[in-house]
Length: 212
Ligand code: 2DT
Image (cartoon, rainbow, N blue to C red; front, side, top):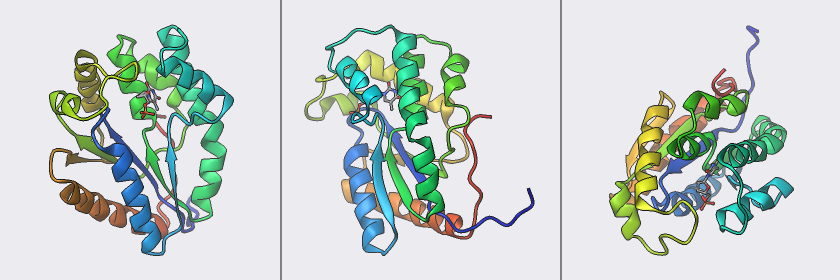
């Protein structure tokens, strides 16, 4: 306590409905930072490559059935298993651009009817993002974009509920960007918010924990 913290990388999370453009924007943002000379990695949740991630992947492809509480806890475990690596990277100066995080965890499970506090509980103590970039797009617009409906959650009624729960989770670390703007305009806004956040972390903004 009271100690001056060191320079570190930033934890930047992109959130939004399915087909909001998160994945392509995350990739573009990471290459932008790399070109600027920052040390950066692109991450995503779920990380389907771990054992827990494989179970999640089968569930998302409708190849396995799990009750809502069980899959919720698996998504959370999938973040916990990456927590220490995440902290090591950030402290060593690497900025992480993360496609989905605990907000997806809570918004999707709460959309199924689970209690929001219950949903937040297993996320407590994970690293808190320094910046959450929310790509805001009406569920109807998202449904018009390509490949919609392949996975379990890509249904309009459900996405409407997810959108509602995202709005409840929004706090001061969030920047809401209009995902209906042309891609270049979205990109520009994301870059500005990101550069501001990265320099704040370089100046030694301490790491904090989620929802404690
Ligand atoms: P993508 O891999 O296409 O983003 O889809 N989800 C995600 C949850 O329900 N809980 C979570 O904690 C996370 C990270 C969102 C992943 C799907 O899984 C949902 C869409």
